[in-house]
Length: 222
Image 1 (tube, rainbow, N blue to C red):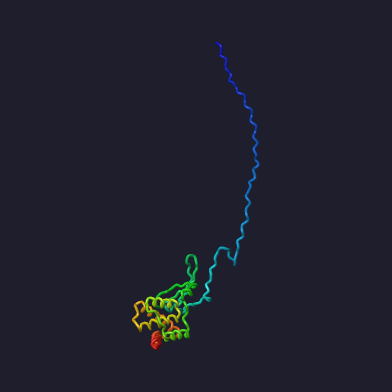
Image 2 (cartoon, rainbow, N blue to C red):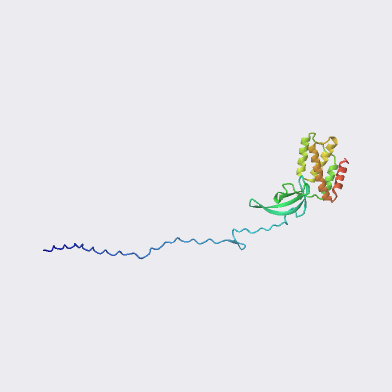
């Protein structure tokens, strides 16, 4: 038997070798943004800017001193029991803390508003004597309309001077001799009389009942 010829496998020609790729091993330079120099921190009195230093409160230049007696309009004599600083809406405000014996209350009065609100010192003995002289003088004619008269006298009390207070006392007392005062005017008279007695007694260093008796004596001398 004849042997069948063996077929040889076709061998594909080998592909040509690829050319080696040249790698760029040199790194690209990184462009850095220039750094701005830091701003110098300003210093003041050895402390960095932006930090607030605690403010020292000086009472030397204040008009009214601690424990001083003062006059509060429509309320009478009071005493400065303390001077304190409080923060309100991020604003520091200095207050007089005033105690009023009658009607037994404490008032916080901003220092920068005290004059505007009518706060004042107690008058001297000389001024107190002038007030006593006013109530002994003849009273000028006043309005017959009690409402108008009431408003006029209330405005005088709001002014707060001891002379104005004396004028109100004199006016209403003389009116009461002619005709009984309406309730509102009677209350106004009582308040004005109390204000006058309080201030004159402190000023002249006399007891309140002594000053009251002196006031009525002067008014009845007319």
